Length: 153
View 1: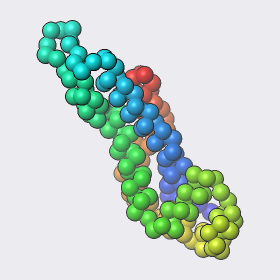
View 2 (view 1 turned 45 degrees about the vertical axis):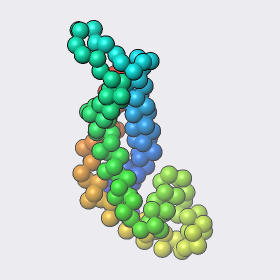
View 3 (view 1 turned 90 degrees about the vertical axis):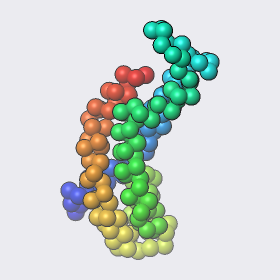
């Protein structure tokens, strides 16, 4: 039976591909906005100095939604990368390829018990690092970040 901690980590791992897709899409949209003038210099309407498109392109990383998505992605992916190779592979097969434990055991040549052991170990090791991004993850899930994403489009 999965504990609350394991379910929380499982949810974050399952959501990671969608978070990555949001991050990539938002980054692309900000880049397109920065370069949309079609020229190297864009003169502001208020008569101020010209702003280089390259400067606007770099400023996209100062966008608050971009920073939150980036923090969320790195908060999940970096601890995942810190796991042992077998643990990473089992998590990827289980949650990103939606394979059953028996299929994972067969593919990797492990017993089902060993797969469960590695899976539990990986989920336990990811719990503490993922606590730091739990609030961002909840904002992403409830749509608080999505509303800002749609507002920018």
